[in-house]
Image (cartoon, one colour):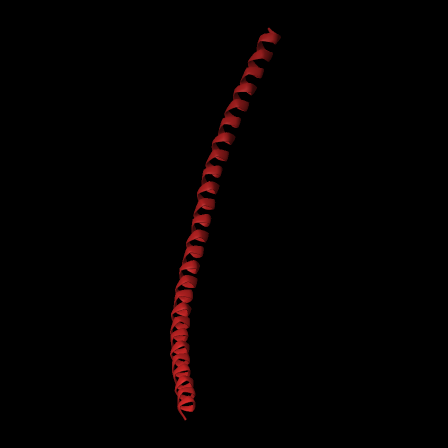
Length: 96
């Protein structure tokens, strides 16, 4: 009779252990889901920040490109004027 009682106590303990393990797995699963969602949100936020920074950098680079193109055009026009003046001066000398 003692063996039957011991088996009953052992079975009860095993069932309690199974329930405790199931509860633990359930809670860990919930924690992992929450942690994963939080991590994804943080990474998404980082990408949004990076995207915004890259867009701002691109806008600044395009503005600088426009400024450099304008400066290049001004320099080319100044060189054209200087070349024309030099040719005019050399032409006047050759004729004289």
